Image 1 (cartoon, rainbow, N blue to C red):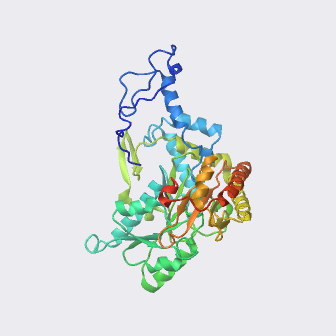
Image 2: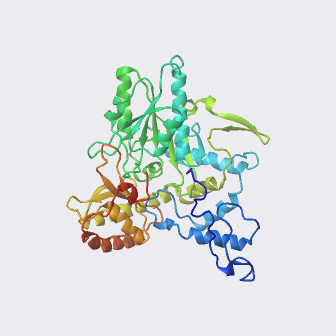
Image 3: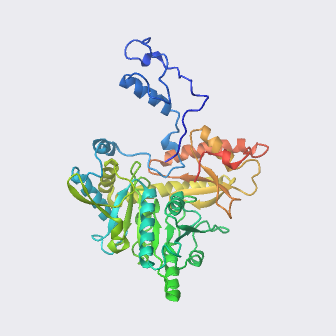
Length: 470
């Protein structure tokens, strides 16, 4: 979570004027000024007043439906909203008190194991998490512990574990390496390869490698990493050297897209070297934040010593998590979504998102001012930059101007080795319909002539150009 400081000196004695009608009955009943912002108020206030104060301030946030930066679900059906309201007071950790919620979690794990071709879906091991970040941490812990058990004679004495991944991974993997003292070995971007390459990954592996992370849907550009090719290269490495390096698939987004739109793509448990997979239920799993899932091929892939059996509130409960108390609402919503859509429903929803992305990519390219890096034909995500002949403006100018129309489109530079490349990224999710895409393109087309008329890019520094940080 973000770290925040207390009140600044400027705001320390500031009191926000409030509409007097927010008072209970009398518009001059003493509510002419708001309570202090950075300490508890001395007296209670009416519920309607407190709600109105919070509501008014939140109006200044961006519109979530127009946020084309986020992968997170921003729309669900009314029925799902009702289920979540019914379950938000249930604590997921209280398995004895809420056994049916626990059963829904178990069913979701089994459904995902079947969807991802686990050899024995009934033997797959998994759990819900607060999101993919926690799921990645758990998967990384399992990889490290398996390596430790195989190297008892060298660790912690002389050996230092390392994890191989592309430089394009989500920041949670860098956090994992920092928090659990694992050396990150990152494959840089080279030329037009914007993610992990099999040969480059294998070149970084040695006897201290706990695993290789592959990403099914890079957040930088939406492209799939070649999981099968990485596994094949690691198979060849084992044949040559005896090194047996497992693979984890970070399928935060793609693990809920590829099974439905790319069923012949081999990336999941069909590959014997894949030991674990995570996904975000709150991304293309179509559930509000936050829920994620972590699955292991079988019990052997998750060391038993990491699983705690807790005698909690009268019941014996196996648990593997970084968090403890959390609401059961998102798990109930995930199960609802699985029931509601089924395979054909998910296929229709994800195909619609991909169709919108591919169509939008073609139309943006037709403007002539932009070069497409990805076209939405893997994740429903398109990344594009300004064409070589454009000198009057840059992607940061485009991002700022689109924000004036309410669209939140991130502009950012790529990692080291390709910091020369700055792009815009559009994430097409369920709820971003073809009609909204038309409106978005209308606004972009309207802005382009104005941008062309600029004397040059207005960006002074990329770090100040956008609020988006990968």
